[in-house]
Image (cartoon, rainbow, N blue to C red; front, side, top):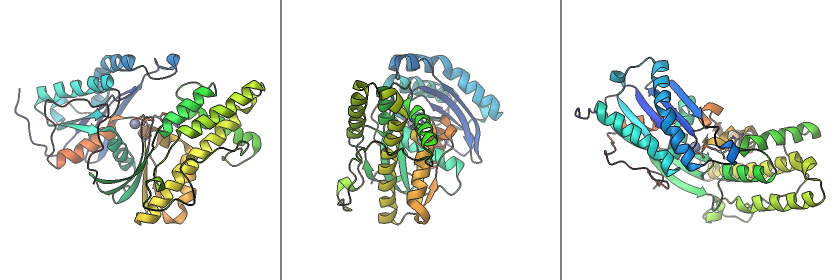
Length: 360
Ligand code: KG4
Ligand code: ZN
């Protein structure tokens, strides 16, 4: 083995395998040089991600993704200056596939290795596309496994403001979609159904307003300092939708109501997320809001956030490609930490519930 070189800048190879996207990317000081993503479609038939299938698919396609990313970036092995890999949170078998690949590659090439927190990666993903998405900012991270509202004082230094107490926002989208008979992954299906509802009713992208759904943990009586001021909950909302769906089903009226129900559900989620984010901007005086995670693909969420923030905030949202799990964001997060002199040991492990780094 070659001695591990110090990181002096240059292209970072990023690897992401935390869920059902196998991704490799090359990122340097100028930004994204290449990004390859293989979305595993083997899970759709099961209505959700099957962990063992995910791990095996990663092992099958990771080598091809890396070759693809390096070819597109026009770099050879000798050009790579460091390796970043998602170490958690996520499915442990899926994570291990990427972690072991990255360790073997870095070890063989004598390169510094950095294990990245997937959700911190999502913040860097948005920053890759927006020059001004820099701390201090309010971060709203919404994915299939997490929903976090935080204040970033500097890169690597965060204050957690609030989080979901039960289901993540994306998880609620997926579960509601399933209850409404829409295919997996549910998030984009709910958005499409809501768009059909809006078009049919002539409302501007918003909810049909046909079903009255709760806004969990959102009350005018919430005060700054209460944990409930920023915390969220989506499980009760999901149950409320399921109850209405059950009634409609008995009346044989569900099929005709799916689009409207999806629209009202989406509007309730957007309402809660947008208001909690507005509160964070108001209380901290941080104007910039950085959105990240798969649910950031939801156009109604971006619209609702921009509306609610008005002129008091600046919203930075990722493009669909960078909102989805990808290795460019992981390489960018690794770059930041490698440049600070951080390293992960060869004993780096995958952690399904890895804690968010740098929380004060
Ligand atoms: O960040 P991500 O790609 O993977 C995780 O880290 O979990 O997020 C995946 C989640 C899924 O729950 C998916 O349904 C949701 O993002 N999602 C959406 C949309 N596109 C993806 N949710 C709402 N609207 C969308 N358009
Ligand atoms: Zn993610």
